[in-house]
Length: 281
Image (cartoon, rainbow, N blue to C red; front, side):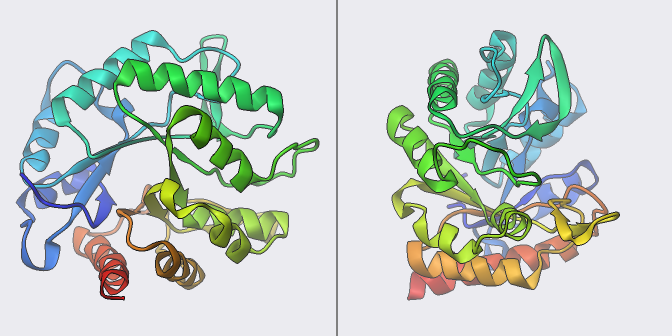
């Protein structure tokens, strides 16, 4: 399978059969799928069989949520070994993780928790990324998080911090445009300035997703909920980014209130259209 990844979708169990049957030509040329490796770290069974079937016709990307690269503990060697087994089996075109922490004292938290952008944290994150990349045999793409609470004592701006991590470790960046918009709205800075500043050469993948107002705080606090269509403001920011940096493999994420497969394909087609327009330009 030699399909070049253009625009993709997060693969959900209810869509396995449709995803495997979706042609890799015509309207779906360049379609790819992304999964969280933590959902497939098993020795066998139906999940791996379905993933084998999808991988037979479409590229895959592995998007980790459990390495806790910004935690104060080293990455879990057993987790890295299981992750590496999936990489070796499915040969994903991209492997990514988050700039966040989620594990301490053997306890995993169900959130990607924020960090201060300090010199000490920079050294710790880079050490953990170096260790993870060595164990996985692949360069990682690191995703910018959504911000909900202003942390004090940052030494670095977010783009500068991410760029320095990439410079020190050789990793790339996964730019989540929805996270940029959510953070900009919550923290009070222009999303356009963030997107105009991120170095084009570091961007290996882009994510798009939906958000919603917090049920208590309302529009004053946006939540990166992944349970709504991509908002028009996020589409506009995405188009701006592509005009500047050129096409990058782009994923449409939906993790809640998941619609029919053809509804997600329509969003994927819109992202593909933006990317192809960028190629033509």
